[in-house]
Image (tube, rainbow, N blue to C red; front, side, top):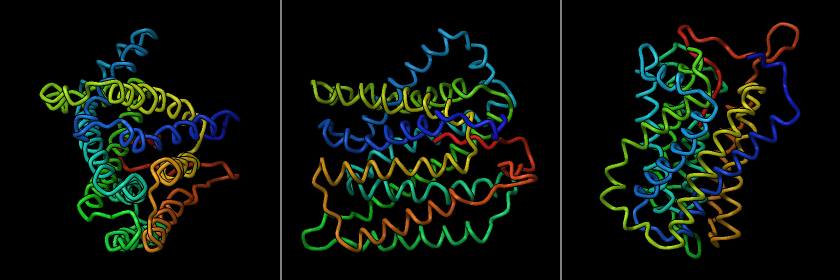
Length: 317
């Protein structure tokens, strides 16, 4: 991909995707479903099915098969397991500790996890900027754990831990997706296959407890989460990503926690205390530091460092 060939519409596509992702926690809260893991499973099933239909209509079934053959198979399975755990942990975190805190912790942890995975799997160097962002993220999580106070929305340590798990799996998924994309797998096919296998992983939960989604509100929630925040959002993100450098995409993706926090305040009436706000700001600052790391080579052309093995720089959340 030529990262210098940016399209004026590309940033808008990524912003739209991030904004859609930012509605997931609020949609879950308004949907009235009981078990967050059931919600996560339903979201993956609906979203991956819709994406599979897109692939079939566009004649991309061969790329789906390619994801299930060596050398892509190992990365496909890694991404599938990571996304299944991410979905379950994220929705459980939001249900436990609130939309604002759960989303900010998960999104603040994700770039840290991505850096560690890249270093472990591809020997990418960990810079001082990354280390500073890590300190901010850990500090933010620590502050958030003890942030509950009179009149503030409760911050549950268990929910924060679940959010950290979600962010870690987010980073692992991104790393595995990079490897798939560098191997030449089309973006939509890679996303469809990994989300589809993730749905298979959580399918037993959905089969056993699908009754919890009965009713108009839960069904509308599943439709929104599956079609809008999974299928549509991933497609918007993928097409925007084709014309933007990864650092720019990381910055634009800050619309996700911003959207989640705004909806938590305005729609759900969440009122984080001052320490929770401070912890959230630390996490967001760490995210900004990671997203805005410099990647310029030659005559000002934006580029990203090449890993020592076959990986790409296209991030998929």
